[in-house]
Length: 339
Length: 186
Image (spheres, helix red, strand yellow):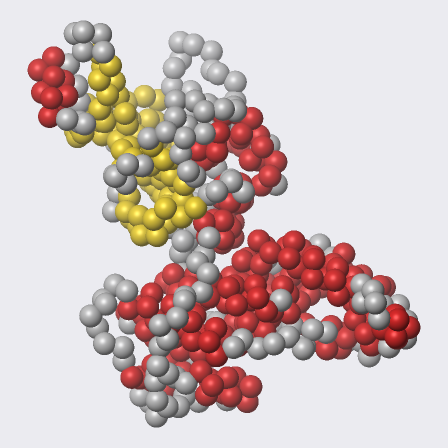
């Protein structure tokens, strides 16, 4: 008897799923399937008796019994939900199998981040007034990243205020100036008048990213060390770590294998949970995961569960679930910028 | 051929139709649920398998737009998702294999039998599986239990076929050594 014979005979005595389990899962699946159009009646043509399906599988016969009556859907509990960690790990597997876009001759990787940032100004009485401003950052990265990069940062046009009074004050006294700033520099160094900062979290170069650990726990420990302990301005270490990982992903520089490690590291965060299954961000939809916040805002990280693509990050008000600040990142291939 | 028959004829057709009409996805579930559950139960026990079965198919449903329509058989795709979900149950699997590797403490007849009979072989097999790396164990059990081919495992795990071959070779060598079996005879 070969090792494979022994293996194939090993643990063949496991119990098959009960009909209740199959019914529950199928029920959850059909519910998910019809969720976008709940008024539509279930169609008889998909009415399989699971027992019939089992028989067909065992018999190896791919014939469908169209006349089988529909199994009544139970009203019992649905199966355990998919956890945030499971979703992140699966997204990691998808991210790892994705190829990074490679610019051809004359092409650039265009990293576009669009969102809403918190900005602050002081009132005449010295108190702080914060509001959100729309921004767009576009970075053109050449195939050889030691060559010239281009960056365009656009302020505005949108603003969001906490109150009409805040809006009136800013409009009358500190109106924001909208417009674009264009920079360029070799190797992504846009300030030619000062020495470049060392590669690191604030300047993630290719070699620095390549040297980051691919073991999720090691990467998470490094990230937690970077963001430091304790509650800072209403943020916990875990929420800052999630934000730090998202911020690196926002650069569009993180290669596919490391993106997968980021997702797996996020899955290790204590109490990471799905906060929204169909979260919209700049016209795209994905899963939002976050950790319980220490303050008023919850840091979240969004990804496409179908592709493992990172979509962006946002901060959500705990009190009412509204989005306070957000940014969405896309990476595409592009020609040279026209400026 | 009716729509229904087409949906049953292969997974790709059902998944393709489910993009416009999501209910078609139930046909994929009906075709593979029992086999996927069996694989999961052999890996981590029936209790976890019940949960993982639902998670596997709900995630597959979400990802159906990425399914390669040229692949008539969805098994590699489904087992790939299931294997990724099993990552979170490594400790459960290790615990199960440890339990299977140990003789029942209060049953002397079992201990005697363990030296000679199949149950003893099963314990050594459990211990050997427990000593494999996760990647090697995934590959070996997708081959032996899920009955996927090299090429199908390659798709399930998104690794080159050569890696499948080397992992299988290494895993089987370790298992054979643990069971005091000779060279590969398959």
